[in-house]
Amino acid sequence: EAGVAQSPRYKIIEKRQSVAFWCNPISGHATLYWYQQILGQGPKLLIQFQNNGVVDDSQLPKDRFSAERLKGVDSTLKIQPAKLEDSAVYLCASSSPGAVAYEQYFGPGTRLTVT
Amino acid sequence: EDQVTQSPEALRLQEGESSSLNCSYTVSGLRGLFWYRQDPGKGPEFLFTLYSAGEEKEKERLKATLTKKESFLHITAPKPEDSATYLCAVQVSSNTGKLIFGQGTTLQVKP
Image (cartoon, rainbow over all chains, first blue to last red; front, side):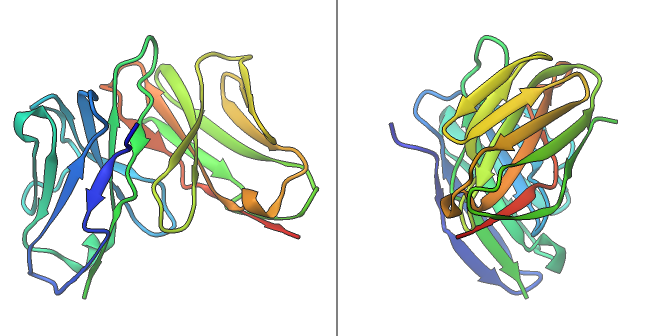
């Protein structure tokens, strides 16, 4: 079974530029998550989709971050304009509702460096 | 506020030297506690889910246990390939399924 795919793997941009990340979840997984992981910290949820709809975006900086999930499969996360503090690894995860808890499977991440 | 704290932040072991990693949590209602392994430059890799106090799960040299306030990841006779960052996360009953992570414990096993 193919895992979660993300691209690009690395991106370097200057502050105030824009950038976009792409994620393809595990086939059949209805729920998709974007997490931000700053060096030395655990991942923090930015946004969660259930099929096409947004379930939780309470920690998404909406003045600069946006995300969409077209047709309930692939998703893109965009930052515009980027700030230095956006330097982090952006992880995409997907899950399928289980009996009790939703086990999430992560992609390799995109490492963003803002200079 | 739901919170997860892991200790120690870093752990250095000799090959074969068993030890435990701690994950303490304060949540409004626990749906599940998750352990992940993360290698440098990679995404977290799922290890275990624990659902209720008293539950234990094992995988090779790893054993995870859960109480009402904390979880332990016991590593028995570790090998250098067990070197990684181990992340603990909780899923709260009242929320939509998002994971709340601790900051991780970085384990280094020397041969």
